[in-house]
Length: 212
Image 1: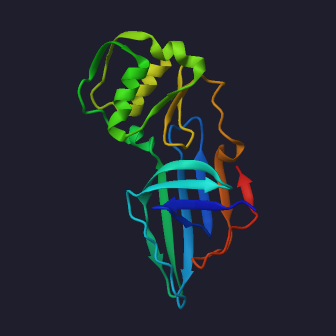
Image 2: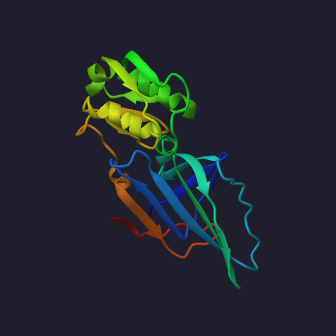
Image 3: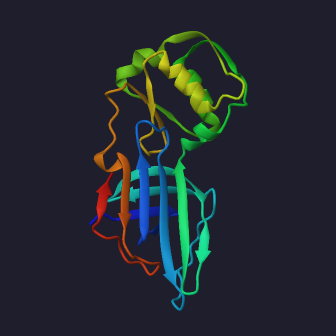
């Protein structure tokens, strides 16, 4: 039986009615979307979760997501209330944000130094796979940020010319590797879906685990 755990402020949350964790080499940032339902008349557990909180998502003690809570819609009907918790890897900020710091023009800098500078405002460290050490340390004559370009678009443009693949393994880092070397565990490929009729009282997930 696989158990999905959301960790926020050192507290563990499980017993999801439905859980979706998305990981793909085609996406720089993994995402998750969990739903739990409580029944009126029961004493509900107090959830100390707020938008923007740091979090991790684990399946069977394997960390799949290291990021932030981004959405928490709550709905009610006559008998139940439903809480949805969703978020993404830290690297999701690279997709959403443009680089507004200085410098925005680099001359005779390495790919590694430029990407590290781009990631610094988001407190994301850059890890280099040994297969691309020469490529990331080589100097680039000149690189300039285009107006309106996101940080991830800048990183992709830098990497494309060097055959470097920027990926996230859900550990909170940005890893630079080579296509064919990137390895994502089987349980994190595409979408992992787990669902049953669990509620906020702490029932565990069902045995139904489908990798679509």
